Image (cartoon, rainbow, N blue to C red; front, side):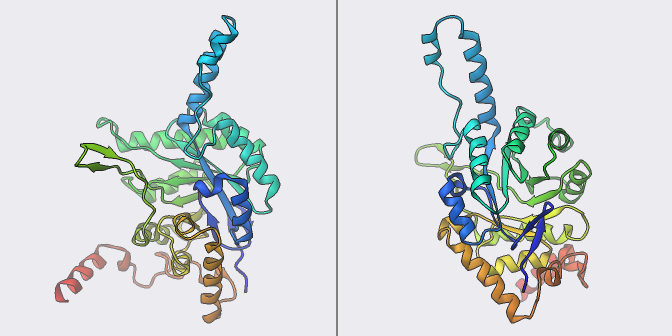
Amino acid sequence: MSLKTKYLGLDLSNPLVASASPLSAKLDNLRLLEDAGAAAIVLPSLFQEQIEAEAQAIDDRQIYANSSPEALTYFPSAASGPYGVGPERYVDLVRRATEALEIPVIASLNGSSLAGWVDYAGHLEKAGAAALELNMYHVPTNLMETGQDIEARYLEIVDAVCATVNLPVSIKLTPFLSSVGNFATTLVTHGASGLVLFNRLLQPDIDVAHLSLTDVLELSQPAEIRLPLLWTAILAGRTPASLATSTGVTTSADVVKCLLAGADVVMTTSALLRHDISYMKTLVAGLKHWMDEREFASLCEMRGMLSWARSADRSLYTRANYLRILERYADA
């Protein structure tokens, strides 16, 4: 039996990829993930705010360089990210990870404008990253900003990054777009080699006792797999881009679902944080067991079997199925 697959042109031993998380910020954890069966690893995202903070810190130091050496002590170092990895340390993490691991290391950039992205994309390529993931994160609070404005900004970033590096570039999309399918295919025409479905936007809660916002990040729940599963199935076989299904992947059965929908790889973070890194072994073993029971010799035999393109009843992915679900619920 072969679990081999391709993602972004990279040859992988299996379809399980460790997505960006605090686990992938430490070299020791990266080695453990590789030993546990991860076929590739996405490092934590380098955030736009970190890049801008570093650029501002450099400007401040240059302004005061000739005034007094002591003045430099008043300026803080460039901001570190949520995992304690600032821009310079992030590039170093990429370099050390690629030297230490046999599996591909994918770097990640997170932002919504061009600020520093092109330069850092080049640095990450030189550091040895096998691919680059652009983590598109933008909450449109400006009520005058249109969907076309947001899409145009994303395309500008993709154009600039793809023109700068020779690495394959994947786009981690938000599901909150006016037309996911159309924009996904447009990204491919602008140079994207892969699509990650989907990014999770931070959704703050309200503390009614203290009249304040709370920003506790909750791990994804199993039910959240439905949305990325739907769009994986709709896009599979209809775009040349590699497809990675992410969010809500909890069990080996979820991995199987994503592959049947047409995913090239399946990404998980929450499951590893809930259990531990060794849980990756459980996911890989569960996939092998499922395939063995049904006598599938390779992933290509099962991949996309239940995608929209190969479905005998495409209404299951459309409004008609919605009506049937409501009717069954009403009759229960």
